[in-house]
Figure (cartoon, rainbow, N blue to C red):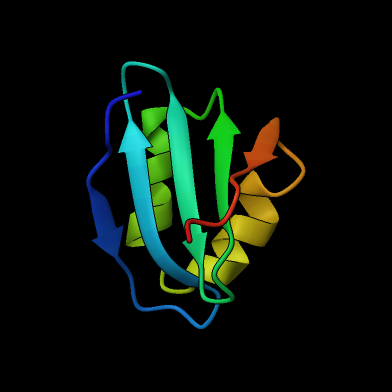
Length: 76
């Protein structure tokens, strides 16, 4: 799997966001240290997340529960 460039974000919930447009894969790094991959996420949703005034509210409203996901194992 190729690495995705993460964008640090101002959010109390999220630390960074990365997106792979070839696979419609959204990677979210949460402030608690967990990282999730969300599958089948359109580029528009990624951009709207980056543009949202509240990243956490956008995540809860438009991403959480809307796309299949996997929790990545913590890097040691």
